[in-house]
Length: 119
Ligand code: FES
Image 1 (cartoon, rainbow, N blue to C red):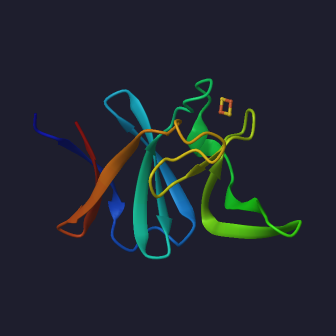
Image 2: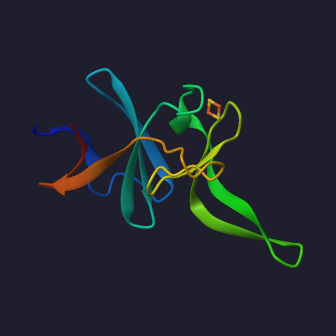
């Protein structure tokens, strides 16, 4: 099955930490540019279908041994606006449940354009 490509922007248009929400033939996709790389996720939370990609892009807090906490993955954690579940934009993995993932898509750069691949 061939993949369809959807233009997001021109290379250099997005600043680090910026996002774009684009329509891919009726499927809403969030595209993020963080530390020189692009990431794309379905704008639909796997928990209860909120617009996941509208949530804040942040880091997460993890409990460690010795009763301390660390703040990690700064800039790569997408927090859903409805119930606060957190997802790693690099692979869609939910932090709360190892079996839960947000749908991700490939992002490619062709001819000075950033494109999402669907299919
Ligand atoms: S709908 Fe996203 S955490 Fe519940």
